[in-house]
Image 1 (cartoon, rainbow, N blue to C red):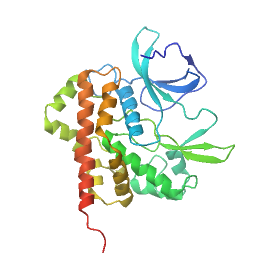
Image 2: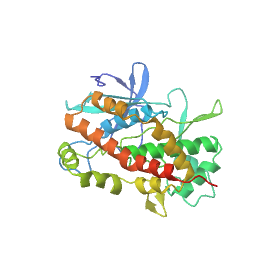
Image 3: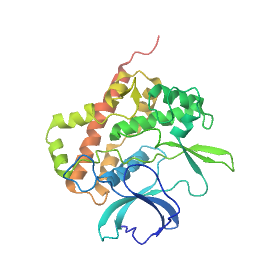
Image 4: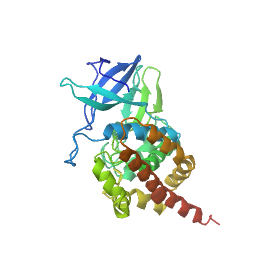
Length: 299
């Protein structure tokens, strides 16, 4: 187990965001954002959320599916009161002088947009992707929809315009899509162990957490998008194409092994994560693929 407590802290670097406290550390000569678990806003049976576990697992599943994703390491940190917490170290990909431009900031440069940068109406997001000039439109659109499909698999309820973006080097005048980051809202982080057991014992509780919530943070006509309804509707060709690409890369055996090998997890957590990822794949992504395969080719 890695203990990050002795690591050097850079007090001159700070991070925003609402999901738990964060500090910048040096570990093995590299910079990392060390994220602490947040206090749950809903569950009264938990002292801290599972957000650090969610961050680690989701990022590693992204990696298994071929995505460019932030490096994450699980470990512990003992605070000044002597309390040890499970934390996740997230590689700081801005080390070396690169600057992260959140998509919200990029969207703000689209002066004809009907919403500001943080507006998550799908039509305005797609317009901003087409109007921005840092990344080829097709490349950024492909990334956006693949991220949407993987978030659907992992149940991410908070992929807004402030937690994905583009890395730029102003001196070199270069730009690239940033690795996927901020995945702590995947995999039901506010569910306590006893609740996990209760969900797995009832099919209707599993289905509720697939078809009813979590929804995507993206909206259509001011209403948050249901992953199942949107993907199974087949109404967006770019989304359909991303579904085909991602679905072909899913190896549940490798995902199960990743979960089994993840430190700090209780047996019930391992079983819950395996069940929910498998059920989300079957009932959302597999369903979408079946409908795609039944489509008649254009005459």
